[in-house]
Length: 126
Image 1: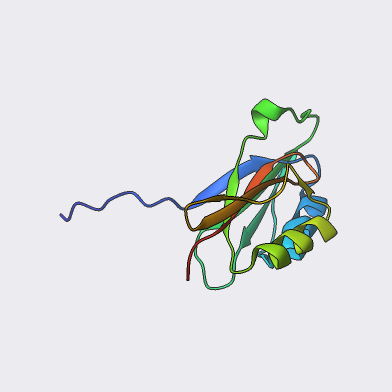
Image 2: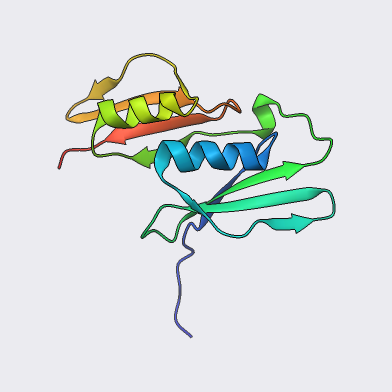
């Protein structure tokens, strides 16, 4: 039997309204949702970036108050153009936690989604 390394497959974050959060990630980052998973008192919306198998799962549970502790991040997005990506995210409802910064030849900025999740936009050299 071959030794297969575990592969990271998804991030699951808790949101107040999965449908509203889905619209944010679709508008801000072009993600695409599959059919929601509906259970007794919970909903999961599974989103992917086109051409990528990695998933972001938005978890909504009836009666659960969202706190910083149960909505942990950051979620990282590799981007091609900082100004365009930041403007698109802000137009969809994100708030920047400051201006874009650089570390060597990498630029990055931290933003917050409408639910308060920390998202890192990162531009690496071409």
